[in-house]
Length: 296
Image (cartoon, rainbow, N blue to C red):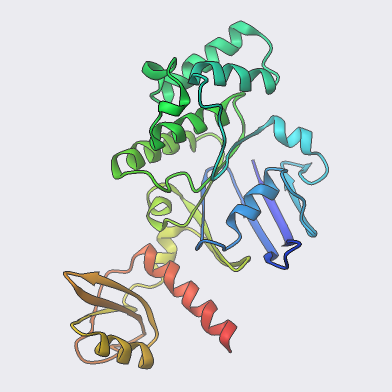
């Protein structure tokens, strides 16, 4: 399956330009779409999911014109938005039955078989008769995946699925997502870089509605080998001094002190040592380079 996004632009009535001539190709596998809050990720996902129209551009999915043949897209689409509503007093089982009928699954035997399998797959079988209002955040997200998988979709979109989950629920949810990406296209939209590192053979970074990078995470990390330098500083004054002189890509607190990470071809100064590059370095480097470009 191939999803091709070409020159997509979208400006909302309030003047916010969410997408700026964005082009992207996504193949059959787990694809990570990463960027800060407000980057345009959700706008892109809503457009691909046929929930809104762009101002210009095109999207094709295996020969289907996504912007014109919306019903055909919806028949092969599973979508878990960043926030989705459910009827709190209805059980997970009854809600899945309702959604399945809405998706056109009218054969009761086939519908029951699929719903039972999805409840097992998402580890919700034991709580299938409980009201959705009693579910934890992680359980609600797993229910969201179950409803997205009804009808065996070929394209699955999940938007910020691990936001707000505790570490144990997040790991369970990531393991579930990983099991889905082997035989269909799954787009994982997130601002959590680590989710993409764990799951996705290919990824894209977007910010301010623009594509900054597209490729394999491992290749992007390797391209920074020997160019990430780190130093721990004890005072805010020293941190501000370094930020004023060097291309700092990120800072982290380590034991109450600031670890400064700098991108440079050679040692940027006393006390800096090379460290292993990470996907987070790729992410912050691209954001910082875009910010400097916009200022200039």
